[in-house]
Structures are given as C-alpha cells and as structure tokens.
Length: 130
Image 1 (cartoon, one colour):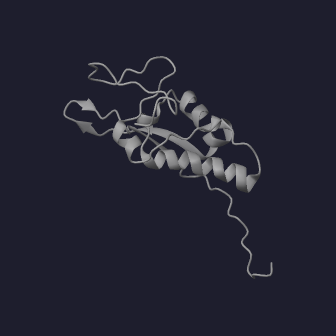
Image 2 (spheres, rainbow, N blue to C red):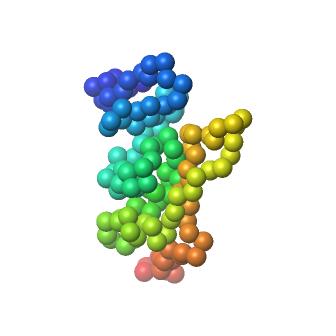
Image 3 (cartoon, rainbow, N blue to C red):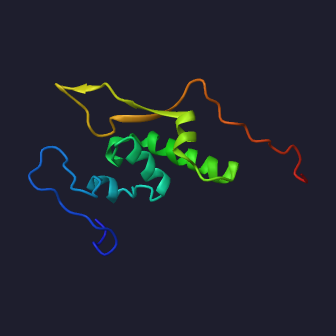
C-alpha cells in the first residue's frame, strides 16, 4: 500500500463483512496494488452519497459511467455536472446475483444509462481545415 503520508488507510480487524467507520470508504489492497484510485471529484462523491453507496459497491463499468458523464458535462456541455441531470440519463440498479445464500456485496450496484435517454451527439468536422 502507499505510505500513510500519501493516503490514510487502516487494516481491518477480524471483520467478516466490511464495516467502514465514519468518513471511511473500503478499497481492497489488490485493487490499490494494481493502480486503482477512486476518483477524487466532488461530483463522484456526490453520486455515491446521494445513493448511499461506497466505491466497493460499484462495478468497474459503473465507475466509468459516472466519470464519462462528468467529462461529457465539463468538456462537451461546458458546465458542472449535477445530480439532477445525471438522474435524467442514468439510474442505479442493485445486482441480483447470489453466491450461496447472500447477495454479492462488492460490485453489487451498477450505474446504467436509462434506455430512453440519449446523450446529444457532437457535431464532427468533415474537413481538416475546419
């Protein structure tokens, strides 16, 4: 793991299920050693907070969907992303896969694009000089 001067972390006790303390999020060591860092943006944290989620609750594609929406707003629409606009295009869906008796807890929520919503298509230039 990175040094604690870089990020604050703690090793869990004898927990069989993740039990984050107030202000903590759960990230698994093998994710960090492979280069994963949760996005630090305020919007990403707002989406998690609004839906009462933690980073470990999201599938990898869900993290990408949130980040893609933020980039779409900031780069294409030239505006800050909002939760209201996000809700027009995406929704959270709890996975229903089961492992034995309990539902899988890690990566158990997906952020999916609403079927009837379409993001505006960018106007692409047709010539290099344009």
